[in-house]
Image 1: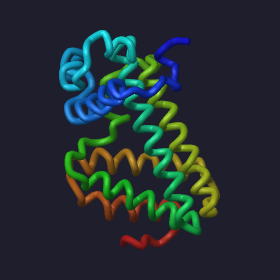
Image 2: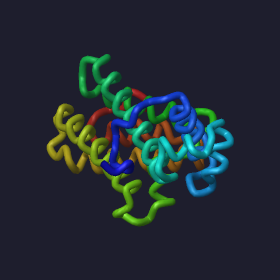
Image 3: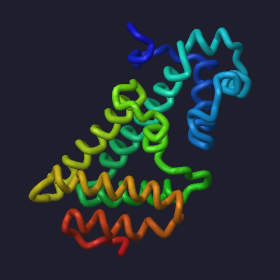
Length: 196
């Protein structure tokens, strides 16, 4: 099996250290700006260990993005399980995005950032980004349907666009985007905003 597509790589301390180092550096500085030698040095692993866990830097980039994807999916599922209505799920989602965009060290969406560095739509990194975005659109389509929207797919497309705008706006403009995000998301679903 190709290491690029292997999602069930065994966990180890050096592997986790490399992923943690990559996550921090890729997000803060950009993927292409961080070389393998720096990842090895800051991850405190020998070069042979790096290549035992990741055949290439792109394999590490995929593991980084898949880790972000898994964390977001788990957070969404856990949040949805805590509340009683789809409207409350929307409130939690908006609040989570607002909290993220106002957090220390926020530098935009890691998937949008990675897409800017990998322009080839056939590259495995772009396919991983596309998989994440397809899941997110599907989750929002289900949420819009549960909220009674007459065209859940169109509502989901608008919600994804609002989220993407909030990620970029949060990086450029700071916390001011959170109120507009809440109003926009509720307007898409034809609800009054609890944050307005």
